[in-house]
Every structure is written in C-alpha cells, then in structure tokens.
Image 1 (cartoon, each protein chain N blue to C red):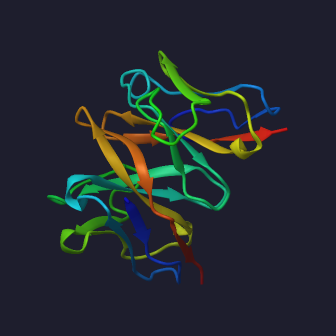
Image 2: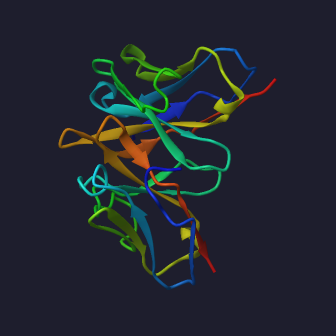
Image 3: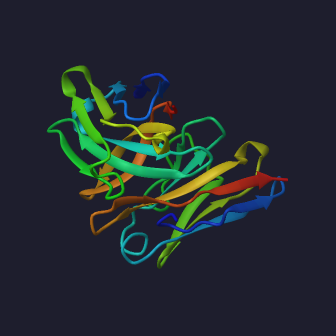
Length: 122
Length: 111
C-alpha cells in the first residue's frame, strides 16, 4: 500500500527555521516525483515545487522560488520542505503528494500525505 | 488570484447532476490533456477524482466524469449524493516555467 506520512504540526516564531518531512512507503521512492502543496487557512491549493528523489532534480513554482527549499534523502525514503526564516504568512497546511509524469510532463497527484500544519506566530 | 478559474460555488439536489467548469488559457488547459480534479472534505487531504482530463482512478465512482473543450475543462457529477458535498479543485500542467497550476476551488453543496 502506497503511503506518504508527514511530520507533525509545528508552532514557530517569525524568523525561526523549520524543516518538515514526508516519508514514502509501499512503492519505489526513487522512481516518482514528490510535490509540495500549500493551503493557507480557508484558501485553495497552491503548487510549491517538486523533487525527483532518484537524482534530486528539483523544480519550483516562481511564487515559491527562493522562499523554501525542497530536498530528499533517498536512503530513508523521505522528502523535506524547509524554511530558513519563517514569516507569519507561512502559516498554512502543507501537503506532500506523489506526482505522476505523463508524456514527460508533470501530471496528477495520485497519493497525498495527511498534511502538516505550520503555525507562525509571535 | 488563481491561475485557473472555477466558480466559487455550485449546488444541486440529491440525484441531480452538476458540472463544475475550470477555465485556463492556451498555456495550460488548452494545450495539454493533463487536467486533473481533486475532492477535498473539510479537514482532510485532497483526493484524486479524475486525471488526464477524463480518466477515473480505481475506486472512484463512475458518477464522476471529466471533459475538456478548448481552454475549459469540466467535472460532472451525476446522481448527486450527500457525501459528494466537498470542495473541488482542478489542476493542469502549465508551460513557461510555472509547471503546475490549480483552480481556486468550487464548494459543492448538496441541498
């Protein structure tokens, strides 16, 4: 059974750093893209970026480029999303999801993690 | 403002059919058969309902169907049931460095 299990909720202060995780199981972790999606309170889904754990090829949405860092450790089948200096506006639910590649293009998300709630408040 | 435009809300009575539209541009929906649809219940992670415009994943009811014409994709739900009440999001591949775009979401209310 394919599963993506994310790390638990975080409460941080502005300016602090944070790294959240997404552990895959039940499939070949290195053979599928893992994407990150933000959902701010009461708002819609936003695609942040993606990583291919097999070779750590990473792509970012222009909206998130330079704001976050996506990485992966294939030895433990885990992808990460990190911030070096959090802002209150980073308060959101963050989902990881396995993203398929169709005809060489990034396509649909077939499996999702349960989400990690990040709260940034002074 | 989201890259793909969806109606904020739609509603229907049990047993009826509804359609949710998703309008993009020639840089995304119009150029690729890579539209997907997700259902999200409150407090839950999104769930894939339709991929590659009109394909249904295993386990998704055949009451859900997808289509596309030009720059607009559509999700149709037939035989509405109370459990279909949720938020629905469309998604598409987009060129020019954006890669992936979502719609703003549509709240479906089953009356």
